[in-house]
Image 1 (tube, rainbow, N blue to C red):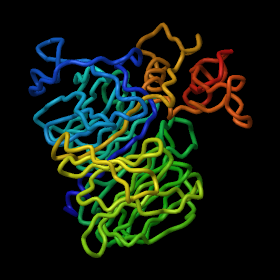
Image 2 (cartoon, one colour; image 1 turned 180 degrees about the vertical axis):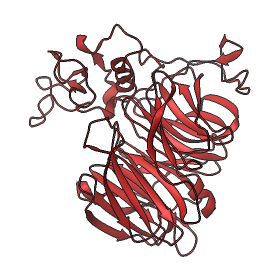
Image 3 (spheres, one colour; image 1 turned 90 degrees about the vertical axis):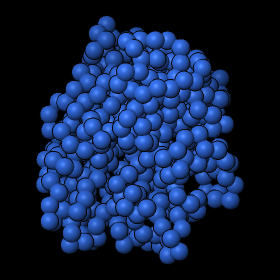
Image 4 (cartoon, one colour; image 1 turned 90 degrees about the horizontal axis):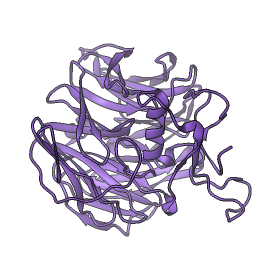
Length: 443
C-alpha cells in the first residue's frame, strides 16, 4: 500500500463552481445509467453521437458538491450529498489525477501514455493528448495544463484550446541511479505572469534528500529549495509550498522567496499532502500502520489538527465546511472540518479509486452572470477558455460570493459579487495583467 500511495499521488482541486457543460453555461439534466467502454462507445445515457452513448446529468443537491472519482477503467461523477452516481464513463485504461481545468476534467492514463479531457456535463471524451510516457502528475492553470512525465524527466505543456501539446515547460533528469522520484503541484488558477510563483516540482534522490524547484507560469526557475529528506508529498496554495518528507515531517516555505517558514512532525510515514478550499491536508500512516489525516493552514493561522483515521484513505478534498475522503476501495465519507468524530457515510459508489476531485454548486445557489467585456466573439480565444473555467469554478476566481464592499456587512445594499468581468473593462484580457474577476455589478 505504501508503494501504491506513492504512485497514486492524488491531485485535488476544490472548486465552488457548478458542474456545467463544456461550454460553461446552462444546467445539467439526468438520464438513465448505462455504460460501455471508451474507444467506441461510452458513457451513461440518452443521446448517441459518433458511436458513443453520452448523457447530460442532473444538478447536484443544494449545498453539496459533485465529486469526481477516477480509477481502473472508470471515471464517475458522484453526489456529495447521497453518494449516488450521477454519470459514468468507462475506458480500458488506469485513470489517475482527475484535475478540473479549462474545458473539463483532465485525467492521466498511464496505460496508454496519454492525458484525456473529459467534457463537463456530457461526460464525453473530448480529447486525448499523447505525451510520450507515463503521466505522473497534472496541474491546470487558467490557460494551460501541465503534465509531468517522469519517464522523460520533463513537464510538458498542453494548450487547452487547441487540445494539443504546446512544447516543454520544464526539463529535468529522467529516472536514474540518483533520482528516486518526482512530483508537481501548482497554485490554484495560476497564470503565466513572469516572476510570480506558480508551479513547484519536487525531486527526490536515492541519497535520501531532495529539492523543490519553484517556477513561474512561463516555466522560468525562480529559486530552488533544498530538502533534508526525500519529498513524498507536495502542494501549493496561500503563498506557501508545502512539502511532506518521507521521515514524517511536513515543511512549508514562502513560495515567493523559497525561505523556510515552519515545519511539524505529524507522526506519519509516507505522507501525501493536498491543498483545497484554503486548507492543506496531510494523509499518512502512523506507527500502528493506521491511516491518519490532518488538515490546517499555517498561512491562515490554522494549526494542523486530526481530521480522520479512515482506513485505506486515498483521496482528501475540502468543500465549504466539509472534508470528503475516499478509500482505495471506493468508500466515501464526509465530516465537518476539524471534527474527526462525526463522519457521514456515502456508501461505495465506485471501486479501485486512484483520485478524487470536487466540483460543486455556487454558494447560496447564486448563478454567475457575464458582463459585456467577458463575452468573446471568438470561441477559440483565451478569453473564452478563461470564462468557461470561471463559470465552472467560480469560487476559484477572485471576489466570488464576497460582499461588494468587503469591509461592510453583506445585505441588500451590499450584494455578493456574482458578475464576471475584467478587472479593467477598458483594456484587453490578460491572464496576469487584466484577469477575470467577480464584481458586485458590471461597470
